[in-house]
Amino acid sequence: MVRAAHSVGAITLIDAAHRYPISGLMSIIGCGFNRFLGHKMCGPTGIGVLYGKRDLLESMPPFLGGEI
Image 1: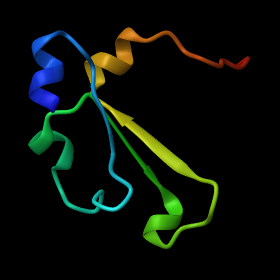
Image 2 (image 1 turned 180 degrees about the horizontal axis):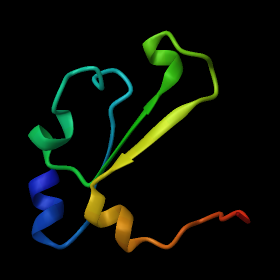
Image 3 (image 1 turned 180 degrees about the vertical axis):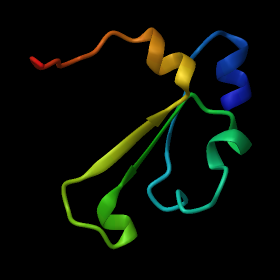
Image 4 (image 1 turned 90 degrees about the vertical axis):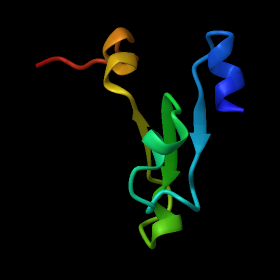
């Protein structure tokens, strides 16, 4: 599915809630973004991570910014 999405220029996001502890998952699958939740890894409820490739993250403007 990722190959098919890339063939038309789409950016992919994989929900890796149950598989994230496997090292190198993003590079194996080739997705642009990967997300997982803390409670699936014995962490607290309500936290999560959106992990993305550096070039994609750097091309995106910040969604929320604060004052320094």
